[in-house]
Amino acid sequence: MIAEFVNKCEEKNRAVKNYFDEFCDDYKFIREFEENHAEYEDDILKIEQQLVGLESVGSLQADLTRYEREISKLESEKDSLTLQKGGFVTKQKELEAARKDLANKDETNRKIEVYKAYAQYMYDTLSEQYALEEAKMREDLQSTVNELFRNIYNGGFSLSLDEKYNIQINVIDQDAGFSEDVETSTAQSISVIFAFIAGVIKMARQSQQADNTLLVSEPYPLVMDAPLSAFDKTRIKTVCEVLPSVAEQVIIFIKDTDGDLAESNLGTKVGKRYVFDKKNEFEVYIV
Amino acid sequence: MIFQGDYQFKGSHAEKVIRLTAAFNKTNDKLFNRYLDVYILAPIVGFLYNKTAVLDTSGKPANILYDAMSKETSTLWFNYRLIMLLDKQYEPDFEKRVDKAFRNYGKDQAIPDEERYESFVRGGVEVLFEKLIESSNTEEDYLKNLYDFMEEFEERYGQSFEDIVDLCRLARN
Image 1 (cartoon, rainbow over the protein chains, first blue to last red):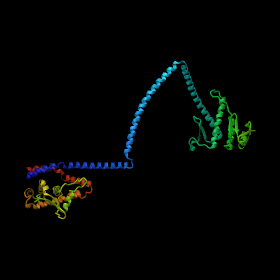
Image 2 (cartoon, each protein chain N blue to C red; image 1 turned 135 degrees about the horizontal axis):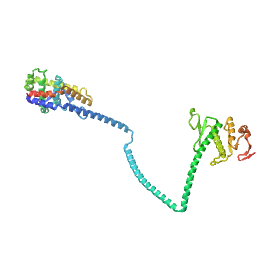
Image 3 (cartoon, rainbow over the protein chains, first blue to last red; image 1 turned 90 degrees about the vertical axis):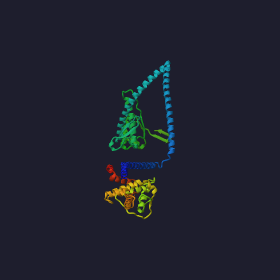
Image 4 (cartoon, helix red, strand yellow; image 1 turned 180 degrees about the vertical axis):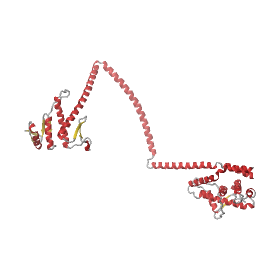
């Protein structure tokens, strides 16, 4: 009986040798499972919260599939069209070559081709020259206009011309806090216009005297309607000084109030005086 | 005589045994499947924690039928003998302890021994209840308390494998 008991002791002792380790493994497994489980539940909750308020995904999914099909259809259509286009381009080149061949075979056509080449060459040369001259002239015009503008307006502005002869007014004193392209008052605008017109005329006169035969112009009379109305007395004085010195002939239409001022400033430079005698809206006589 | 008929946990111990064998989660997991399983383990725990408890007959009992117990008698007797052999507090004399384990068992003179054994059963039930159930509220608590208990057990007794092998060899010779 004792031997049996001892055997049983040994047997049980062996049986439990790794019992705790195995138990630990199981416990660890359960804990990990629970942790993962909790994490997944958390994730599910988050996803569910994101899904709240979303439209049913089913119809969106169906739309998506349809669009994707449409895209792939259009893509393949595009591919086949690109292929066709390549074919057409090649064909066009062939046909152009063929046309050239045919044109050269005919004497008249050949001559025209030659003339066309000359014309093209001349056009290119002249364009180039023109662009150069134009840029130079624009620069000259800009500096002339600026000079005149300073005489007339004597403010803190400078002018610049862009390629399309639009005038931009810049503040010279950048520290004053203004950016480029200032919005001008009426008098400022008219000053600019004066300066521009006077500049054009001055340059026209100069070009008449210049040796440069590429640009020839004749001086035109400067005709103006009520040019002084917008200015104060000081400006009127400067304008009256500048205009005659620039233009060969100035014709101004003026009303009586400004007329007296102009008379006193222009005085000796006035060649002829005429008065409009208005009978009615459609009938005026020059006295 | 012990292990020869139906067994009854009584009073507070019956309640504790019922709790020890109750499902602690929704998937119906239990710490002990049957009352019998508590009955097998409790005396060892009671002895190792040196915990005895007096009989309490109040309330409803928890029954173990002999039919089920009869299949586990060899384990039960093994535990009984083990405790009789090791309980120096109860019987300091080694020879007498051997007698209790292998000679007197099942006889009339063994009745106080059986009562000693039963008090360890009740004490063990109390220890198991205190360690595993009392502070458990959630499913996680049950697992954690089980683990803590197992770890404590392992720390106390888990390192004695080689000693037991040596002892067994000694006993043979």
